[in-house]
Length: 127
Image 1 (cartoon, rainbow, N blue to C red):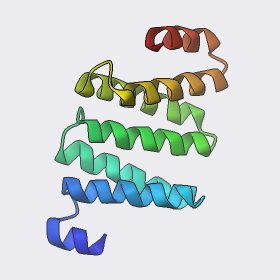
Image 2 (cartoon, helix red, strand yellow):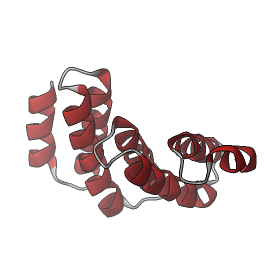
Image 3 (spheres, rainbow, N blue to C red):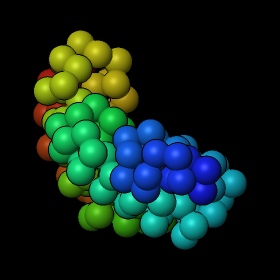
Image 4 (cartoon, helix red, strand yellow):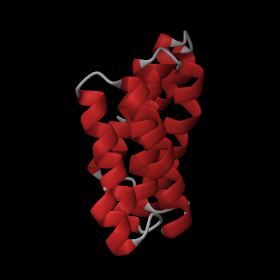
């Protein structure tokens, strides 16, 4: 990360991708508290360097939402995964495989939140 930041700068899109990947590694190792600030940073870099509607921003938001879910913060995860789904759908089109991944996760979160009617409606929309 230090090499990438020195070469490209701390706010370069490629730095954002690396920060997101490091967060993924920490999350996979079970270090959720270590991963969270990196996911936030990746989102900030992507929103500034690319644009809020870029697919990479949607990916970072989705990863942050999954982390929040893992930490038991469903109220924090739900708006992020919803936004990630909207970004990916607008940027990649309704038939892209990422849309299915994001939609399934949103349905899962809504079900866990006890919002089964809303989840069923989304499930029907994306089935």
